[in-house]
Image (cartoon, rainbow, N blue to C red; front, side):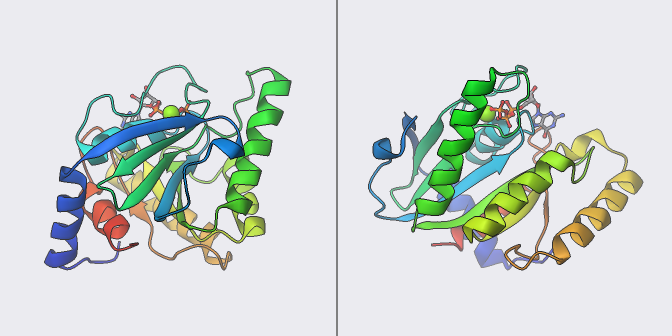
Length: 209
Ligand code: GTP
Ligand code: MG
C-alpha cells in the first residue's frame, strides 16, 4: 500500500463526510446524467461487496443497497458525491444464475457504458480477498483493458482472512495486475466490516478530481 500524506487523507475524509445523495438508477445509456464532472465507478463480480463499500466509505448504512442475494444491484446507480463527482455502483458482473437474456443485457450496457463515458476517470475493480483473481475478475479486467478505461484493484472483505493468507493473496493479485498497462499500480486492501483501508481509498478518490 502506498502512503498518503495527512493532507490527502484529510481531503478524502472531508469529501466522504460531506453530502452524498442517490441520483438515479440507469438501465439504458440515454438515461445517463450529463457528463459534467469527474466520474468513478465500482466494478466487480456479483456479491464482491461493491454496495457495502459505498455504504462504508460514506458512513451510511443503506445509501447503496447491499444484500446476501447476488445480483441485487441491477442498474447503473449514480450518486452525487459533494457536487464534485459522480460515484457509480455498477451491476455485478458474471452472475450466472440470472436469466441469460438479462445477463446479456447487463453486459451489453456495461460494455457500452465503459466504452462511451469520456468523464470516467477510474474504475475501481473490487476483488474478494478470499479468492484473489478468478476467471470472472479477469473478464472484467479484459473488458476494461479493451475499453481503455484506467482502473485500480481494491481487495474487499479483508477481515475474513488471516494476515498471512492476506499477504499471499495481495502478492498474487499484484503479480496478476503487473502485466496490465491500464492497471494503476496501487492496490487497496479494504474491509467494509472493520473500516480497514477506507481512509486511504477515500484519499485516492478525492485526488481524482
Ligand atoms: P451485487 O450488487 O449483487 O453485485 O453485490 P455487491 O458487490 O454490491 O455486494 P454487497 O455489497 O451486496 O455484499 C455482498 C455480501 O458480502 C453481503 O452479505 C455483505 O454483507 C458482505 N460483505 C461485503 N463487504 C464485506 C466486508 O468487508 N466484510 C465482510 N465480512 N462481509 C462483507
Ligand atoms: Mg450491489
